[in-house]
Length: 426
Image 1: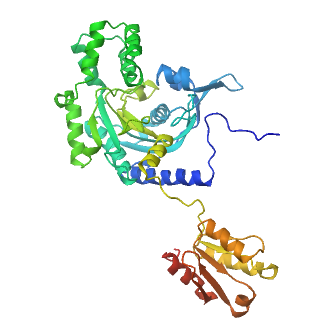
Image 2: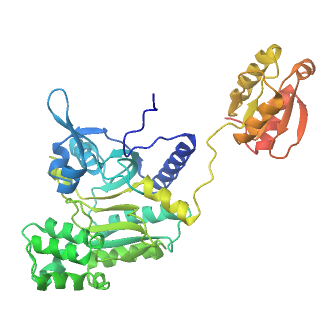
Image 3: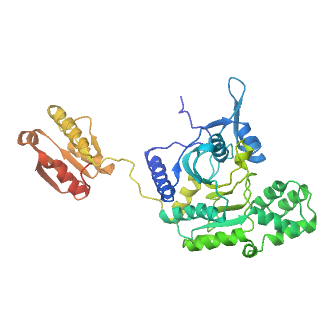
């Protein structure tokens, strides 16, 4: 019988891949907590109606995993976090301090066509500030993204955060005679501009009711990279970014509008400078969403970043982290059947002293056990055989240098710490 394969668009996380996920989670936590944000999470399953009128037609109708439960209620595997976040805030809005600063990292699902940089199951960092209406809040969220990129070694010449504002877009559309009853139709059209050929985009523009002069006017607007200078929310945004000495990561891009319907103000996306990959992260201001899910009206801004494209960019930039999947610091071999109990006791003593210790579970050639430890990247071996047991000593071998020494049993922990450069466990 052939091996059962993974579900299309999902990934197995072997220890090596899991080490990257754990590393990424730790860096995300550090960046989030550096700005005072608190970790939270929401259910993986949500009612379908939470997304139906909030996230945009494409996400709901084409990308969401939707199915009925046994009672007939339509459920959705969460395709994004923002509606869940808005629901959680709406449920306890009266008791939550302002501003609310929350972040999370977890799995999401979208029924997309799997390709390089895009999977159906992915992990995503979400971070939001709720309760503050100001360009300062927008700038802080964008600064967190830039600070994170700095912390993992991505420089401005490798990644750029592109910024725009939907209110500015509406004003500029009105200036050329476009006043849509539903501006989200125009926003979706603009969001697709870079992904479509000229002919296909012109065809879609005509389908939403734009004439040739309006289409040409939009094209001209999308080429004006100085419009932000006369628009206070963006002017203040860029001033604050410069004050944090992060300006090199940012630029104004009139083509950025974000495809989700709930955005109301400043929006931004991070792209690789070479333009070869999908967006690394995206977000912006969404001041109406909490009221839309039944809560009080509260302003909010946030962004989300997936793990897949980031990993590809780190590989291309040559800065993918070198990680060891095995956490063990010390291997305790099994010399023979008569000393197994002594090896187990030594392993326990070293764990109690704060070391990560792996015990080799069966007597085998010492050369094979040492080779196993070296292959796993375990730096030290602590051996207790018949001779060591008689003399109340332990043989320590440093596999990094090949050096070997015997030390009294009572000095083993201290010697291992010196070799590892660690402090005693608290």
